[in-house]
Length: 107
Length: 395
Image 1 (spheres, rainbow over the protein chains, first blue to last red):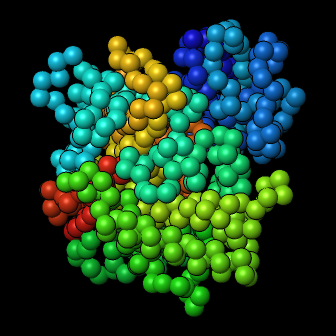
Image 2 (cartoon, one colour):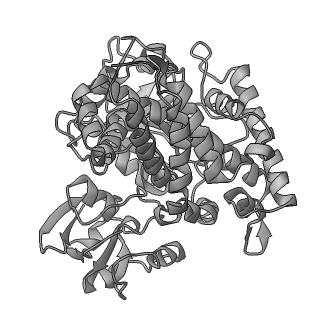
Image 3 (tube, rainbow over the protein chains, first blue to last red):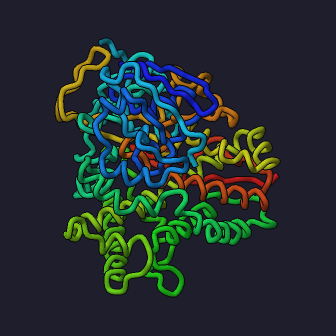
């Protein structure tokens, strides 16, 4: 399990205790975080679960795979160096305390 | 564990008709259940299904994803392969299915909907399947680039009939019957003719791109092209058609929801999401364990098959309050109506778009309707659930 905090564009902050293996997208949509859509269901095919990871997560997460990098070309909000797709980040104890900020728009 | 007289048999006609009371007992009493009849474990709680769906390393699709698999299919299609092969295949076609790339299809889909549902003007009673099947096949043909009109290889209805038949199974033998295998073979033969046609004269369509695609300089294996194309046609026609039937069934059954979406068609997307949660046509898929897993006190062994009962997870009261109520204001985010994880449905965007347009146009012609029969004939299938006939009476 890991506690992950989602900060929406409105400033609304939600901390979720996510089971190991759940993607941050799945955890967010199952728990009422509004700023993530996840239209494709988590197959890295829609770019509507765009998030900005904090420095801590950036330092512990594996680098994005080519499929994620390609799909990040399709995000609607500004793409930044810390842009990731939440469907490709799997919760585990190593991410405990991580914070992701959500963009103003996903589509 | 004392199971008493409890059984969950996904081949039973009673489960085809109404699996929900049995799902409730599975979730409450047997959340990790061995089905003798299906020879597989059954996971029925929302969170267990999500966990399994995300963990493709443990819950593999490479031995097949349909509850009752078709011969020779496992390992050669998107749904029945694991990463990295899965990602390779999917990378070739997923762009065509992204929402923003479907905008060009909106107008043709609306034209099809107006033509098909326009036939209902002046009619008092009809089988919704007659119109939804025409609509579905035409939309899929346009989306995939199957030859239509003067180029058509076979009548559209034959494509639809075989797609529907190949996903069914025999309740008595708990296997595919000769008629189901024949339909599968018919579809492969049809797909192979389309592939040959597009390879000889490529067009700017999905099947041409896929048939000619190369990965790292290698052409895709012919079997991968054939079986993936076969599956796209099957999944497209059967899943979209089955879901249209379930949507019409819900709106015909729940008058308040129907009146709300007819009065304000902007609510249709909410009704679509709630229908995907409430009684999605894709009820159950399977995986195979790559290692032992202990869950709820039971140890499932490496090599065992596991059913992910999406239709049960969507009714799990641990996730959705009052899950047995059809409530279009619910906005059930995170539902399992399209599965989840790397194998989540490829067609989510086109399904949402096509169903929304279909019901907008259907309701312009038939704004008020009810079901004629209380009891419906349900398709015999261990994977999908939808009525074979949905007779509607115009109010």
